[in-house]
Image 1 (tube, rainbow, N blue to C red):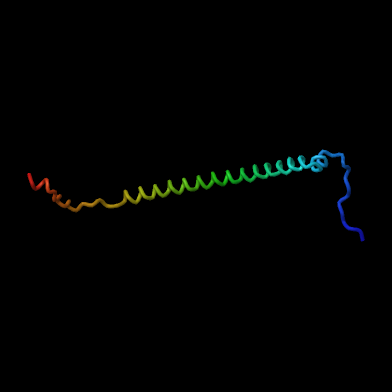
Image 2: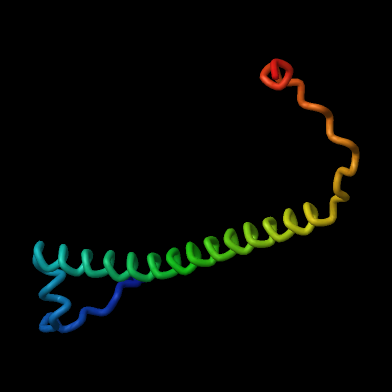
Length: 91
């Protein structure tokens, strides 16, 4: 039983020429790396913007809660303690 191999294509295509030379292979692989990097970079950039937006919203909500709680506290109506400062006694 013969081995399963890919059928031989005609060797006149541009891809055969590029992949057949050392410089062409480097160019093709660099192009693939740049393309994959651009796609991954776009997704990472979108996720980074999403994380920044979520953190900003969390800070905004936390600040609103702090303001709300601080306004709900009852004011301290107890009498103030007298200040015992040495300059005040000398006069």
